[in-house]
Amino acid sequence: MPEAASVQAPRATIGDSEFDRDTAVSERAPGVYDVDLSAGWTIITAVNGGYLLAVLGRALAHALPHSDPFTVSAHYLTASQPGPATVRTDVVRTGRTLSTGQASLFQYDEQGREVERIRVLASYGDLDALPDDVRTTARPPVLPPMDQCFGPQDAPAPIPGSSAITDRLFLKLDPATLGWALGAPSGKGEMRSWFGLADGRDADPLSLLLAVDALPPTAFEIGLSGWVPTVELTVHVRCRPAPGPLRVSITTRNLAGGFLEEDAEVWDSADRLVAQSRQLARARLA
Image (tube, rainbow, N blue to C red; front, side, top):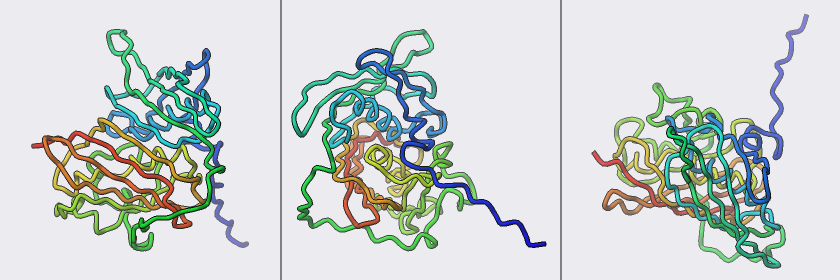
């Protein structure tokens, strides 16, 4: 009797994936949305900043007449926790090609007081309506083939700061940026990786908001340990990504006064620069 063929789980699709379900918002009143922040996107106990940005980004896509984020700037005020939250949006301006809105995410603290966690200002448009003219000196990062890169599952011990979110991501990091995992950080402040969602869902503009903040922090390669909380994060979405894995490159050039910047580029399978970001983060110095 022939052996039974192995059954491979079908790839998730945009609109029907764990990421879509976990960033879903439910409109309670005009401009007010209820959300349930999933524990599946946590780092230690805090909810990942890129996931949170995608949640607010989805709420703004509902509130504004345009559906694609072009630029999103977020200030992280207090650490978010898994569980219920409320997003309140406000339409600042609507135009023919761009609409601008703001959004804030609120939760209740242990004393029952409402606390603002994040405040966002964003402009949305239609990525499919942009012209094809591209003039750039930017070049995609050079990464080894995936089978020569390493993910969290390849580590002999849990990666510092890793947690539930790593089970939901497809990460294959460039060995040249993994010295920190071997106790020999390069000091260069660089992190590069192949990137995707673990269930195979292709990238879209909202998931790009996650991609820019999903790699291990560059501070690890500078020689610091512990997680690096985001203070401010600005993302520019440049075009709709082609299907297939993304490549993410993040660099830090300056750590001073206990703060550092992380500049990220996200490239798609068609060698297009689909998103850029800069964030200011707090470094936990020894």
